[in-house]
Image (cartoon, one colour):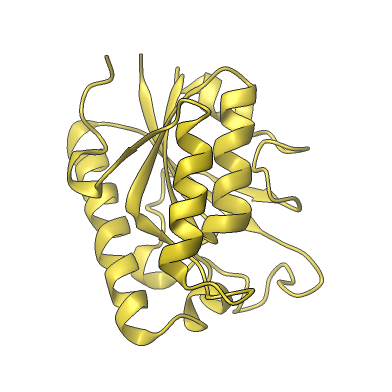
Length: 172
């Protein structure tokens, strides 16, 4: 199996709403994954969300410069939570012989979850870097509580959850 790293929706507007300490931790872990992927020759694909709130071509819509892509790393633009829905992500992964994705990014309970589920539905192996995705407290729940629920649901779908430091190991 060939792995690829999907960095989902780490866009200016989304990360600016995080607590500064949480934002720093997210950037640290996403950058750790990206550096390891580049060192190991593992392809990286960035995903960027666009809608009425995140308008294409604006500064809030852009990928955060702290984790921005290198010149040869593709960006897949999407309009739905699932990064595979009505995009060319499947083709981008196929062109790189990727059949197992490691996912990180924003927002845990929306686009990260939808993309992980979409990947499983399409037959990809999926690993979630459990310390490299973030969201906001919502519905009376803390981010940690949201993550606990998300992780339980993804484990039930046979999604592997591991820390960033070991997310890009060889797939069994």
